Amino acid sequence: SNKPKIVVLGAGYAGMMTTKRLTQKLGQEEADIILVNKHNYHYQSTWLHEVAAGTIDVNKVRMLISDVIDTNRVRLVFDTVQEVKKDEQRVVLENGELEYDYLVFSLGFEKASFGIPGMEENALSIESVDKSRLISEHIEHQFARYSSGEETNDEALNIVVGGSGFTGIEFVGELAEKVPELCRKYDIERSKVRIINVEAAPSILPGFDEELVAYARKSLEDRGVEFRIGTKIQECREDAFIVGDDNEEIKAGTIVWTGGVQGSSILDKSGFEVFKGKVNVNGDLRVPGYDNIFILGDCSWVMDKENDRPYPPTAQLAIQEADTASDNLTALLRGGKLEDFVFDNKGTVASLGGSHAMGTVFSGYKLYGKTARAMKNVIDNRYLFMLGGPKLVLKKGKLRPF
Ligand code: FAD
Image 1: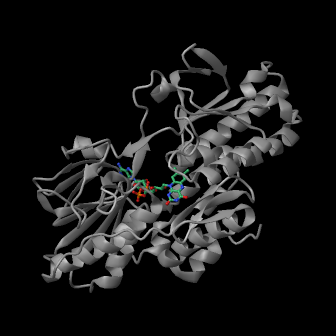
Image 2: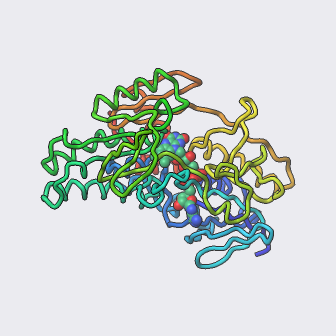
Image 3: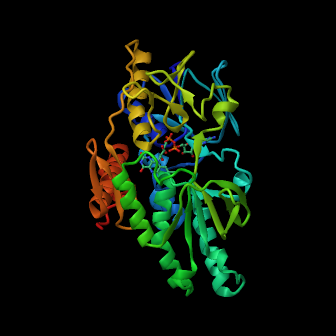
């Protein structure tokens, strides 16, 4: 057809919500909408630590894209993006090509190893459904090997986690719940299994409120998590982290890196100007010099003008950007005025496993324990509601009271 073509790359938070909003805002005759994604399912990246620990069913975390996006309005293309030829307005896929008039680039995050020797090759990472599931399967395999006598070294049961950011802390929280369960299943004493979190910064959860950080640390230590704070990882070997100035070796059968993420490597491959793994976009979320390309979510830096630094990348940010991007695309098609993105921070809650959690809501109000856990569920269910209404909340929501 000769309708303008909008191509959305990536069905994560940003891509799904942009597509959803476009189908709500635009008439059928106004544009062709195409959504490209590696898989036929959308998953919640913010629940991947649960997949990695094995505390949630994989199918709870994902949903068929066609269950929530109107396929009469949107053409779904399940393929892997290789490169954007931005000067030719083409997208190169593994199995084909697409032309576009407008592009929304939202391919999310990838692991960043910061050049730590061996990290890329030897550490597992919480990056996608499949990579996260590999972690829980790997951990269980270590327990099975040990209990069967295939493995006799206690250290094979150790789990080391690099990085005490949001992901690292949420992950060790899940492990604190999962490990006792695995110990019962495989008849292994809990005291034989160590969960060790290693962080170079002087504190866990840098940037978080001190009281909340102290609460999180105690909650996790009480459930058997060990912290090595202010400890730099020098090297990652197949069976150990080498840490600190004295090159101490911490052996483990499971090694996970959560210490850094960057935007999709397709940005760099496509010749976008990349700063610290992401592209700086204008206030209206478009790429400087490319009036028809929006970059959203974990692939871009958007300036917070009030604080003179970019907003930290979160799902909450990606979802809100989708609103502005879909409004601005509508304006472009209809000849209206574009708006600048403004973030409305609704707070952040970190789960610490089971009924444990902490965080802030409503500009700084602190929550702990079960109340925080309940609020976390409200936040997650709200997203599902926006995406697929009450039906999706019932199917994929977190409804279990703690
Ligand atoms: P994503 O949600 O990562 O989506 C990217 C999509 O693109 C995926 O579907 C992927 O399959 C697809 N894709 C990637 N590459 C290709 C390709 N080459 N071709 C085709 N498709 C491709 N944020 C919060 O706000 N609150 C939280 O509590 C929170 N907890 C988190 C916990 C964990 C364990 C993690 C890992 C992150 C957490 N975050 C949280 C951060 C949040 O998940 C990210 O900021 C968010 O996912 C970014 O959304 P996005 O749309 O940019 O990308």
